[in-house]
Amino acid sequence: MNQVLISAISGLVVGALFGLLKLPIPAPPNLAGVMGVAGIYLGFVIVKALT
Image 1 (cartoon, rainbow, N blue to C red):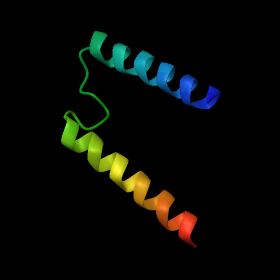
Image 2: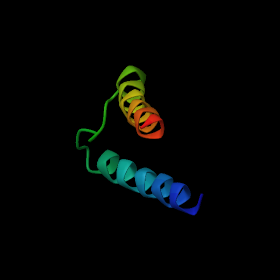
Image 3: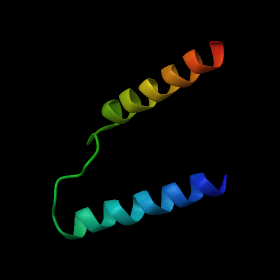
Image 4: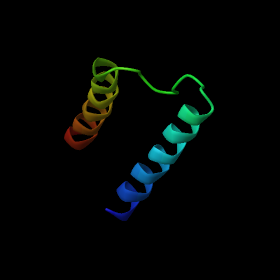
């Protein structure tokens, strides 16, 4: 859980930095893109658990 919290805080800091510097976000800019990344991760985890 600690690793998840550190990752979330790091992501917020990096996102804020990109916003302040007016740079394009280094991630999918909409919910569909984020869900696509989450789907890739979940698919990997499921296959890894089954094998």
